[in-house]
Image (cartoon, rainbow, N blue to C red; front, side, top):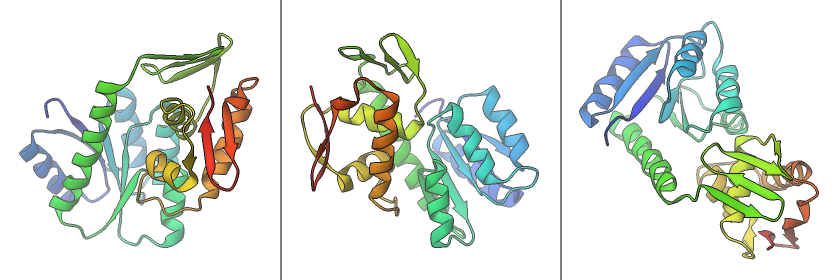
Length: 225
């Protein structure tokens, strides 16, 4: 895969060097940051295909870095951590991380996960339509923008992904578990009530077309056309 660029954020120079060497073996390009502020400066200057980040960072911690990235991008974020308790994992996912791996890890395992994300995002980019219209609801997939009656609405990355997935499968009912797997990823360990919360805020944001997302009682949701 050509021109794949990774952002590696870790205060440990030895770990950054190990990941960088492995990335070079795959033909990937790496940028490195040892603290949260340096990481955000790099992120604002370049486009990245994936971010690999230890949340224990000087200057600005990983939670804030993740939060700032998610304000402007849906790039996959893979968390590396020495001690990942249940609450740490939940917090990472709530802030928008896509996966985690516990240190010490085998570099081959890390890059197996990275390749899965790269394959997934590359496949989506190739098959994705550029414009989706349902009455006054319009989705521009190139800019990841959503318009309601010609006015842009602000969605979080997960709200957008949820709307996009449902709109690509009109009139098909999906369980909460399926939506968690498709939108949040199979490694997400949170409650299926996460789906209900995002559906509620998504409906608020796309009014008066909120009825397009119908509840299938006792099961899940579907996008009604």
